[in-house]
Image (tube, rainbow, N blue to C red; front, side, top):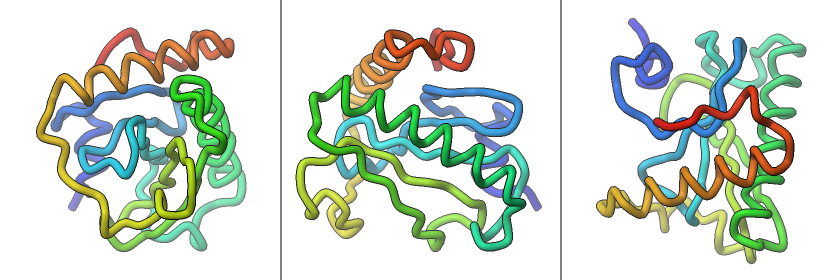
Length: 143
């Protein structure tokens, strides 16, 4: 049975994509810890990062690094946070977000963002920053 993320990647469920390539995609989470909180997800369904092919995991981390640079730029954040929790959805996903201190990593603070305009704005800001950094082919124009 396809995971929630596989359904998003297939276009069956909506998402605000900020990155798309043949191996992975990045889209905003609907329960962000900070504005711009993005999930980097491989197109291949892999449950745990420890089971992921080394090349695919390296690619996902490279994508996460690019998105992290974009997040720092878009929000003038001192750091880009990155973590893999792995319990929410049984499909590898790397959390990337602009961060200001350690409390920005507390998943208990994640709340469903009900303001669609805030999510749209965050996606636009991150896409713009990624394009400014030279990632024009991987950054979709919308959605």
